[in-house]
Every structure is written in structure tokens, then in C-alpha cells.
Image (cartoon, rainbow, N blue to C red; front, side, top):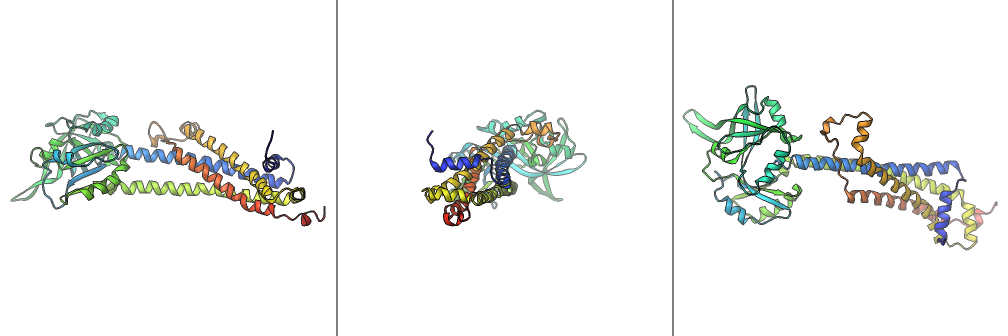
Length: 414
């Protein structure tokens, strides 16, 4: 079978079983380093992607992704919210725009007080199913009964544990807005409400989540009928709310303000992103070390094969073909190592929970399904390409050295 001479010689040197043992040892170490580096980057990157996706699903599905409300200097609710929804431009990835009534507040049980964020949902409005779907999916106990006029509330699991209240019990809700002044001072808006359900999002949102019917919350806040505090956007990807917030703020009037989830939860996702970058950097150093080992092994090959290279040179093999021969030898290690690392990383990512359970690792902290894993094709491709690029760069200097071997010097004592 026809093969280019440089490729034939490079592969022959790679498969050779003779030569210095230390040189072969360094080659194997560099191969193992590439395999472990590529596999580790794929596995850890997939798990980190899974955690980021879980954060988006468990936090940003129940908190406001993007809100349009009255400006800070405006008092009272929003009257013509139907006209506002019709006037708002449609954003990329937009799923729904729904009315909302929100307020900061405090809930009081028999044992303690706890600051909360109260969300009022209108189940009969168009698009409300998108709001209710994550609550139904993560309902831990009780039922999702948000019918108007009953003053029913749904609590986050951590909040319910702190208050020690469960479905069927009553708590006092004290809202930050809607207070009235009396001769005795400011009387806050408050009401006894009944807990009908507990949702377990397994996220930070569980600590302060209170959901109730929007009309009931509006009455507690002493708002006029049909008034809301604002409208809320939902997107296919919550990250699409960030550019949409900038566009809407530029287009809307001064009496309206736009706020995205980034104001309250941006620090959490920034921390996850920074952690991903640092882990990728540290694991990428494994590939870099393997690439340096390839430089060392190829330099040893060049020194070991100086006489062979000199003979090939005297037989008419051009210097650029000698460079290709050494580069092919190094790239063979890179291709084999990256391929095995790719296969190993994908297999371990697929069965990571089973492997960890088999070795006795407790995964209860990650929920019943174990560690979340999301394999990003672009991220995996970038990892493999980066390993191949580092391998290619590692072959350049040894190949240049091999092409500059002088036959007279190399064969002087042969």
C-alpha cells in the first residue's frame, strides 16, 4: 500500500520496540497524560455543565427572569398592564409575558419570623402554565391550590423547615407594602394564610419562596382591583433575559424600569462560571505537561536517531520531509491519546453516577438522580482540538532540530 515516505518512517519509529528505554517511557507517560487530561476535562466539564443547568432550572424557573415594573419613584400598582403587554416588543426566546404581584415581607409561625419574597400568580392568565409547571414538578407535599379568595400559599422546603409549618397549618404574612397610618403609627398589611403545599427546588430559592394567588396578594397590599405590580417575562433560556433587559430598558418610558435575575442571582452564576474556568485551567495543565513530555521524548528520539537521520539525508531525503517524519511521530501520540481520552471521557460521563455508587461515594447531596451531567458537543470538540494543537506545537522544535542534523558531524565516528 502506498504511503508518503515521511509518514511511513514516522509510524515506523513510533512502533519500534528498540532504542532507549527511557525514551519509550517518556513517550508512554506523555500518552497517558494526554488520555487523562482529555478525559478529565470532558468528565468535569460535563458535570459542571449539569450543575449550571440544574441551577437554571431550579432557581431561574421560579424567580422572576425579567420584570417590567413601575419606577422607584412611582407609588401604587400598574393599571393598564394588558395594554403594556401588547405594547412590549417580543424578545428572542420569549415564552410568555404574564402579570404579577410581588412584595417583600415576613412570615410568622408559632416559633419564629422569617423574611420572604412573596410572588402572586394569576392561574387564569395566559401563560400561567409556564409559571406553575416547575412548582408542580417539584411539589414535595400537599397540593398546588392557588384558587382566589382562599389566601392559600405554597412555601419553599427550606423555609417550611425553618418555620416548622406544613400543609394545613396557618401562618401570618406581613407584607412590606400596603401599610396604613393610624394614630398609633404605621400599621403593616398582614393576613393569616393557609399553607397548602411545599415545593422542594433544592436551591437557594427554597429559603425565601412564598407563592400565592395574585389577587389575594393584591388585596393584602390594598391595591385597586385589576392592578398589578408589574409583568414578568419567561424565556426558553433564562440567560436570554440579560440582552432582552438592556433592549427593553432603552425602549421603555422613564416611568417603567426593567430588572433581570442578574441583580439578585448573578453572583451565584458568576461564581459557577469562575469555578468552571479555574477547573478547566488546572486540568488543562495536565495536557500541557503531556505536551512538554512529547517535546522531551522527540528530542531524545532525534539524539538517538542522529545517525539514521544523517544517512537518510545523504540518501537524498529532503529536510522538510525529515521535519514531517518527526512531526508525524509526535502527532501519532497526540491523536491516539486524544482519541482514547475522548472515548474514556464520554463513557465515564455517561456512567459517572453508577461508578461513584459502586465505589461507595454518597450522592445524596445531589438528589435521587445523582450528579447532573450535560455533555456539550462544542466543549468536547474544543478540548480535543486543544490537545491536538498543543501536540502539534510540541513537535515543531524537535522537527526543526532533526532537519538541521549535519551528516558529516553525525557520521564522523560511525
